[in-house]
Amino acid sequence: MKTLLAVMLLLLSPALSPARAAAPEKLPVIASFSILGDFVREIGGEKVSVGLLVGPNGDAHVFQPTPADAQALKKAKLIVINGLGLEGWMTRLIASSGAKAPVVVATKGVTPREGEEDGHKGVDPHAWQSIANARIYVANIREGLTAVDPADADYFKTRADKFLARLDETERAVRAGIAEIPEANRRIVTTHDAFGYFGAAYGFEFIAPVGLSSDAEPSARDIAKLIGQIKAEHVPAVFLENISDPRLMQRISQESGARIGGSLFSDALSTGEGPAPTYIDMMTHNIDELKKALIPHS
Ligand SMILES: [Zn+2]
Image (cartoon, helix red, strand yellow):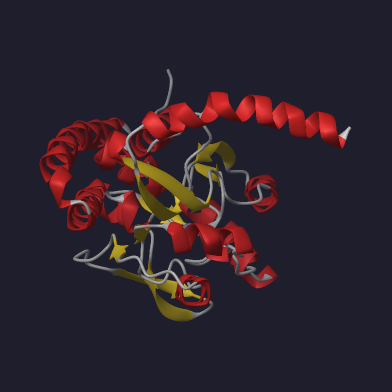
């Protein structure tokens, strides 16, 4: 059996190797999570091969790197992270992997928001939820790619400019979508506090029982307080999140009477089969879900 397998591999490998050798070498880039990976792909196109540490629907707040992640990081020519404290595990992973590649902090130049974390003030890492910030991410990533591959500077610039134009279009659609929602309905409950930048940018209130990081457990008192707030302020809907356990929101919906409005993508994209495999798909999906749940149908 083993011999047969070895023969089969021998037969297969000559067919694979020439194709591989003929393809131009791609720049190996590791992005910490899926949203950054999409930005790198948009700008880097066929010049890059993008690896992710935290994959689709994964939670970057509570990620536990494996030895394979350390290996991938060591082979990378560029590492892209969010910063603002999202990837608390990254410094140690870079040190232990022996990775030497330059690190792009995609939020460099973003004005950070403050939020609540376990009763303390903390920096909100979810800056990508505002498209104005996404433009800053694009500029930082383009700069990082250009620094390690200056020969392709024009290629990266052309692709980044095209992507920025599509971001402008997406932002217009988000603003138009919010404008269609009656002002009294422009607030919902989500599991964790991931939409502060979105809310500030587009005029929308998000209330969350869990703080800035998804790993905190809300107390019974917090939940009771939230249910009281939903009832008193007539918050119309609670939403699920792709990275969070739905049970907390289901319970809050039952106890408060607010219905489940839909599901939002907060900290990760979907797989290719899902509704949000790219950043633009994610923003479009989220605004569509909000509109569906919050615009009254007569
Ligand atoms: Zn988060």
